[in-house]
Amino acid sequence: MLNVESRPLQYDVDIDVVVAGSGAGGLSAAVTAASHGRSVLVLERAARFGGTTRKSAGGVWIPNNKFLREQGVADDRTAALRYLARIGRPALYDPHSPTLGLPEWEFDGLAAFYDHGAQAHEELERLDALHLAQASNGLYDYLEKVPENLTPQGRGLYHSRSMGGAEGGRLLIDDFVAAAERLGVRLLTGHRVVDTILDRGRVVGVVAETEDGHRLHIHARVGVVFATGGFTHNADLRLQYLDGPYIGGCAAPTNTGDFIALAGELGARFANMNQGWCGPVVVERLLKNPQDVFCSFYTLGDGLLSVNCSGRRVLNEKAPYNEAARVMAAWDPETLRYANFPLITIWDQEVADRWAIDRLGNPIPVDIDSAYWVVPGDSLEELAAAVDDRLQTLGAHVGHGRLDDGFVTELKATLDRFGDLADAGVDTDFHRGESRFERYVSSRFGDGDGPNPLLRRLNLNTRLYATILGPGLLDTKGGPLTDTHGRVLNARGAVIEGLYAVGNAAASPTGQGYPGAGGTLGPIITFGYLAGLRLGAADARVHHAAGERAGDPARG
Image (cartoon, rainbow, N blue to C red; front, side, top):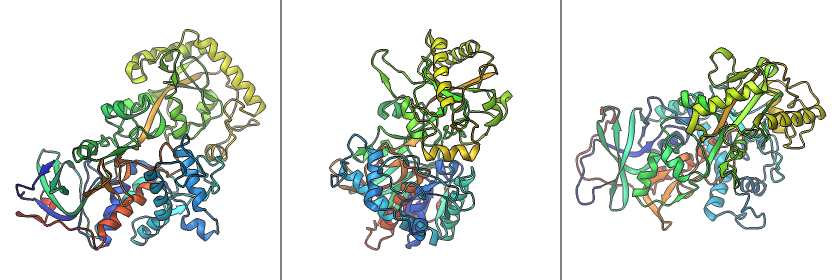
């Protein structure tokens, strides 16, 4: 950090608010602050605006949203908070505790999300920045079967012109950018924030670096907001903080945890650093195409299952992706390894023919000839040998995992068991096909024909296929602790004046939970909005800098 207390600094830019990062969190803060009369500059490290939000389907999970209220559906506050607490901190959850068993900051954060989420949506809609509609096709929360979830349907919203399509995130960002420009927000790509500027303990600006190495000293009279995402693409930070062998993910490649070191220098308190928004990811797709890869949000098909390197089935393959990925972090005290990392997903020719859909990270390819991540075989033995060869090639990227010597024998027993369950139509091992969420996803892309449309005995007389999955991330959840206004707190719990953090750059109050489609963007947009409100408040402290200032950031 640069401390200008004893040495006045000549600034290149003078502005009320600086926002680092242009995903939904940063732009919601920028638009809100600008709507309250603040001059705002958004700095984006990448060559395009939007961060990870731009890659997403644009889902936004909002409890007690206006659509529910218009329909007369009660989304009770206590019940909603119990649901979020139950899935976020299952080992701590206590429905009789005033904070539901959570740390006070997490409870306060969840309560603020419930209390202000719908307000954020409606105010941003009024500003022509956010256009959402309720999914009309029966969208259920991912964990709708949890008893605490008394409103399992209707909280998941999508961009009104996309409704869950692949372009939803782009449309969402485009609307935010257009609203920001109408409000006079200045937006720059190719500017990475590399340092903060401090004056008598207050953050009063940032140092931004362009792609050609030119540096700008930018004065922020009211505050600086970091919305630069998590540390998905920083292998060292993943190793140091995450509780499991996470290998990367589908966050924007610029999500390398830039704010962690900057906030640490300023004495910030960190929280939830071991958690992430999780999802299985096809290992080879991540390695070859980290810019565009998706986690496997949906793994389609009935004659398909996943096994570990011992040949055993270990999960419901249709479970919500956040929960499925966590299975791969299970530790085996006998073998001293992550017994479910990697997982091998296997399917037959009928699945290859019927469920080849090239979206949402579905591993079943439309064009089998170009599907470098798919391992084929004409028998279980041939398939297993080819998979083991691929694992050897991948080496450290799969934890040096190899198939056990008895893999084929165990796999045959697993397939027999799976087939018997499919014939009966009930998965008594892992309950596949029992939740309304799973049945909703299946119906979107095509049900199978058996008694349970999500289960079918694999046809071993056809060509077989496999792919290798690892535990991935949409992004990490840890970062500096903030209050409900987005102001970063130091190790003693005091506000670091002038410093804000929102989105995955800040500690999330959601614990390990992922409530439903849009469960990331709902809180991110809400807390961005709340930070923008605070920055736009009349009593927000304005810093007056000494030294010469320039007012046009475009000169950088």
